[in-house]
Length: 217
Image 1: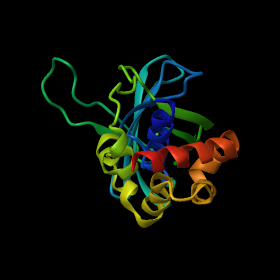
Image 2: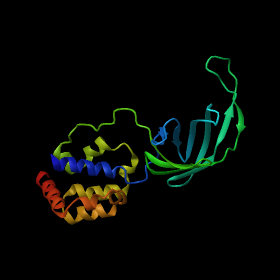
Image 3: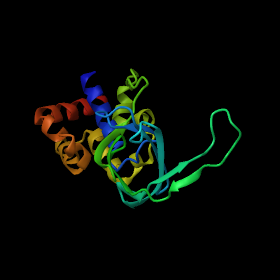
Image 4: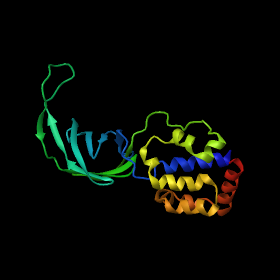
């Protein structure tokens, strides 16, 4: 069971080895509650909205449309509007107070982590998590672990799982043909290197995984 859990974690990591697009939803700086940010990406464009307060304590909204300039960096300009629709009044369109309140840059290190750089400075943001994010207790069938296909269905919801590089490296691990192939696959996947996976898995453990996979094929 321990080996199955380890293999499930490996496949889950492979599902994320390419740059993951930022998750749509609400983001915040965990050290500075009271303001928040909405982020949604469509194609190479992000719509960004921020709710915060002005110097007098009045709630204030900013929005921006940011364009992708590199794999993990988006740039745009903040806009501020006022005089729009109220909760109970008749409709009235908002008017721009400032259509260029300063440049904004979003950079992402992961699908739920990034930084904001704007006129107020640079600070980290993370995806705001408010629901039950506990992992599934479902245990995959051992034969499916060796094949990998069922684990794809269980853990992968992103097309990045199925590019040639992660698929090749995953097959090297799940085939169990050679401990050296497993160790080599660890070293070729940058996200696993960043997570310290190769350093945390001993050669004996790799050989044990290979032997286990051979035994169930």
